[in-house]
Structure formats: structure tokens, C-alpha cells
Image 1 (cartoon, rainbow over the protein chains, first blue to last red):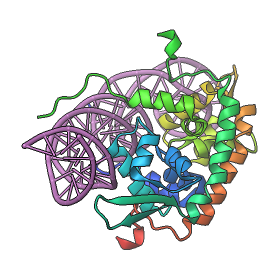
Image 2: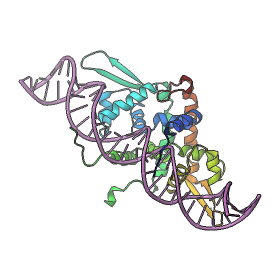
Image 3: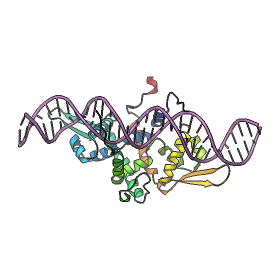
Image 4: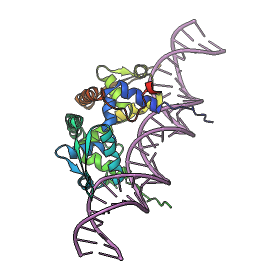
Amino acid sequence: MYIAKESSTNLQNKQMLMDKCPVTYTLERIGGRWKALILYHLSNKALRYGELKRAMPSITEKMLIQQLKELETDKLLLRDVKPVVPPHVTYSLTEAGMALKPVLQAMATWGLIYSADAVYNDVVKVAEL
Amino acid sequence: MYIAKESSTNLQNKQMLMDKCPVTYTLERIGGRWKALILYHLSNKALRYGELKRAMPSITEKMLIQQLKELETDKLLLRDVKPVVPPHVTYSLTEAGMALKPVLQAMATWGLIYSADAVYNDVVKVAEL
DNA sequence: TGTAGTACATACTTTTTGGTTAGTACTTGT
DNA sequence: ACAAGTACTAACCAAAAAGTATGTACTACA
């Protein structure tokens, strides 16, 4: 028999770590499936919504705007709307967004080195199918 | 009326990004609520299971061993069992785990700078309650 | 005898994340 | 008249992550 507590600690733990651990704070900002990739695509030049979509064919439109919105409210990127019709919207990195480049670079470097000989525990290789 | 596809692209997207994007690869290895913190605590010296637990009072035992297991199979840390009773188990960083230090450092630095004036969008501040 | 400490395991549930499907308003091109 | 392109919105759902509660085997100590 299972009796659950009324209030879970899930959000409380998240809050606490965001507050006390700067790494967790950063992780919360750039974590998830798509944010790093979006930041990467915008790292050289500003792009329009449609350009981003075409640069990442496997992201759905819902996920794309959702992530863009979150990145915007987190002040990592800027949304520029030209009030014309059809709409013309460009996304570019802010100061804070630019400052993430060395972070992403460090992660990319580690990933490149240590994924080479890694055992893929959570992924079934296509070749094995 | 809603009719769902039989196979979702969730895992396929994850696989694809892990394969093509080294940042995503790294993120998958150190992401989640607790892994960064565990790596941080082990960054200076090896610790026993109980010492880790006491260092992170709000993690549950289930989450702790689960994360430790994943970090071990990902070869970021080493599990040392002394076959005595009561059990004596120590965890320490591997080469790959050590190599993550600059990555965590870069994230910590960014987090410290850009969390100071951040708007907490996903968190209701305690003071507001 | 019973309580605490060692390091876990397991069944179950809640919360969050990611994905699916369908639709909006407007204009230009065929 | 109708399709295609612009940039979205919203209802709905499945899968993954995180958390809860409880139990294990063994020993030392009071």
C-alpha cells in the first residue's frame, strides 16, 4: 500500500540547487534537448525563425518557439520583430548568450574527446539493429 | 479527436543529437538534478557512500545510488568496494571525470555572473509568498 | 533484545519534458 | 480559387526524470 506525501520536494530541490549551485543554474538555462543547438546556430549570426527551422529539420515548430521563448525570457537571446506582413522575426544572442560560447566550447571539447571510445549505455547503435 | 503515431521521435532525436552534437553528448552525461553536484563533491577527494549522502542532505538514497551507478557505467567515476562487513565503498573520479573539471568551472563562472541579476521566471521567490 | 550504522534494492507514484495534430491571420504567386 | 510561405498558438498525450515508502543483510554496541 502506497500513501504519498501531499507536497513533493521536486520543485524545492530544483529551486534550492538553482540558488546555491551556479553549475545547476547554468544547466537549467542551457539544458534540455534543443537549447544548446539553437545557441550554436545563432553564435555566428542572427537568424530568422524559418532559417532556424530549416537549420534544424528534426525539431518541431512547437519545440522551436517554446525554446526560443524560454531563451528570450532568460535573456540569452533577443527577438526582433519587424511589423510587416508577412511577419519578419530575427533572433540574435545577447551579451549573456555570447558569454556562453566558452562554456559550450568547453563542453564540445570534452564531448569530442570522451565520446570516441564511450560505451553507449542508453543508446542502441543503429548497426546493431 | 487525437490519433497518436505508433513510434515517437523522442529517442531518435536524442540518439541523433548525442551522435552529431558533442555538447549534447556532454549534457547527457552530466545533466540532471544531481550529477554535477556529485562530481563537485568528488573533485577533491574520494568519498564513501555515506559521506556523499551527508554532504548532500536533500538527495534521497535512491537518487544517489542511481546517479552514482550511471556515472560509473559512463566511466566518470570509479567504485571501490572493500569486501568487509559492514561494507566499505568509496567513489572517486576517473580520468574522464577529472577532465570535466574545466567544463564545470566554465559553467560555474557563467552562472555566478549571470544569475546575479537574473529574473527567476520558473521559480517563485520565497519572499513573494 | 533492540537500535544504529553500513550500502544498497524495489515497487510505486508524481512531475516535467518532449512530441503530435490541428489550426490561426495575412499575403503573394499560379 | 487555391496553394504556399510567414511566424506562430493551443489542446492533447506519452515517455522520462525525480521522489516516496519500505525492505534487505550483516555487525557492533548498549
